[in-house]
Length: 267
Image (tube, rainbow, N blue to C red; front, side):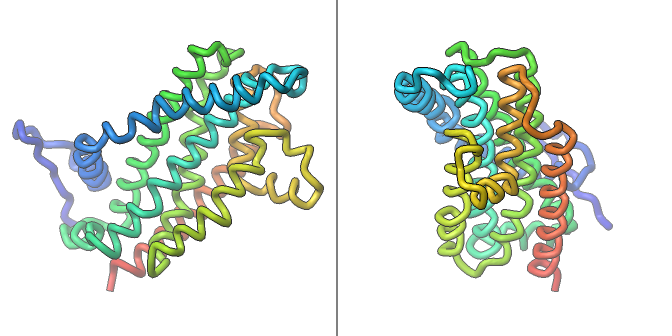
């Protein structure tokens, strides 16, 4: 197997790790488009916190569980942002690399292994997730909505959530024949999951059947962990149980994505 060495403009060679070459490719592209993400990374969290936390929270006199609504809401918004960034970066970009610009086909002809292509692109998605999470944490810290030093663990939770969301989405986006299926994914899965996974109100207020569905989603587990971290309280489930469940989603998603990528790229 031939390993790819990427050379910078300065002439200095980057590490001879194929997945890092793929990550470098995506970072070079992002260097020219990062300004478009400033709105979603900084201004959108401010507007969301003001609209939901301060605006709606003013009508929630007793807070939630004895906690001011803004402080209770913030960790859910952080997890939801990480989740949506992971899915957004794993849908149209992946489909485009297969169907339209066919970047993956060029990479596999480089030659790169399928696992390297998948790992490098997933690493870029996780980079986007953690930078968005850090920006949201900074904004909410300025609002005084972080009540515990354990909030520093939130980016780690977001990374695991990002992988748990992105890996199966990679598999889905690689398998569908057109982008209309991605719109269906957002309409019938991503948006309902965001609304009913404990981000805006406690899952316990849902009927039993919907509550069970909420518990089955990876987003609820990350919301519960982030909320426990920022408020300095115990999560509803054990920390180990949450982490294992998210890791299971990530591992299953990786396995599925690897199989679909292999089928699409290797004749």
